[in-house]
Image 1 (cartoon, rainbow, N blue to C red):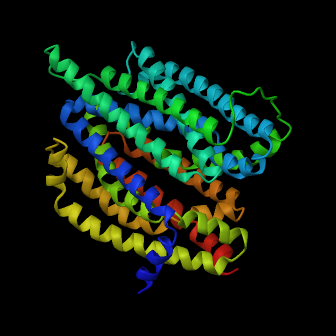
Image 2: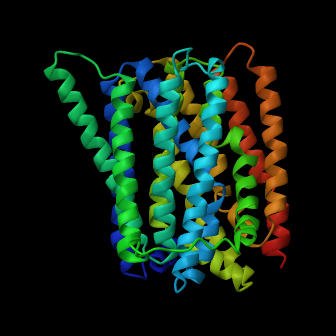
Length: 429
């Protein structure tokens, strides 16, 4: 009864259906893309690509400098002030370029510590950083379109990336077959990724020009509100960094301890487990917006009611999903051309841990919206530090199972520690 009412609420607006279809299609196409890459590439190359792809996403996140929230907050205010609109976009792009250059220098200096890099990897690192920057431009484009209530176009951009990348992979594969080469190399995949990222970043700029900001005009850069932008973005950036070692940066850390083949096993297991999250996020697309709006109205009882229902749906869905994946893990991995008892263990560990993580998926954002960013950051930094210390101590023999246990335990504990704060801010209020 509760779930039926909840889904009726989610689908109350007809314009969500098109967005929902595009989001689910994008998730499915993304899964299929990595499914075919796992079969086309040998295990080592697949591991190198998954590590590179994760590193690209990580660099673009760090280069964003927390502006994903700042753009959403300020762009609606600047809708009738094109100079300020252009200025905040320019500033986020400029900051992103500076951070990307710094990361390139750091990766070049410390490349010997990472398993997929060697002394000749400077060009590979340059490739990764350039692709990351075009990823950032796409993210700025989608965030800007979201901020002016154009969510459908955001989904078009996302699915354009997956579609174009898939097409270029197919073209690369058949071109090497014509030349009697029996395999794709990492460079082939990264070139396809670079071309795709340039195309989609350009398309996002075109959509901004067409829908919200005439880029043919000359604008004066107005940074008078720069301090306000940074005041909003820095806490979000600190939040992103505070849980980096056990969340989005886990694969980067894994590359310090194990070879590319095991990285491929780990990434594929995460990709399989993420299916349920992608589907639920697609179905519950309006929920985060509803939570933030009710917090702004200080309607905390409604926030708690929504989160309880969403958490229950998450938990039930993840338990059912985990049951099937656990017992069919060998069959699932065989679709990715992976036949390894260790890979089966990795998938089973991750899917079990995911059950305990799923109920906490909607705990952090309400605290941020309720101005508890410092609490979230401090808790994250504590577990970030603890995670790194434990990895240094227990990864002496480079056991990937130890890595999973440590990283996923930190994810659970970091979220569970925030429950008392959630109770005081949301429930008790």
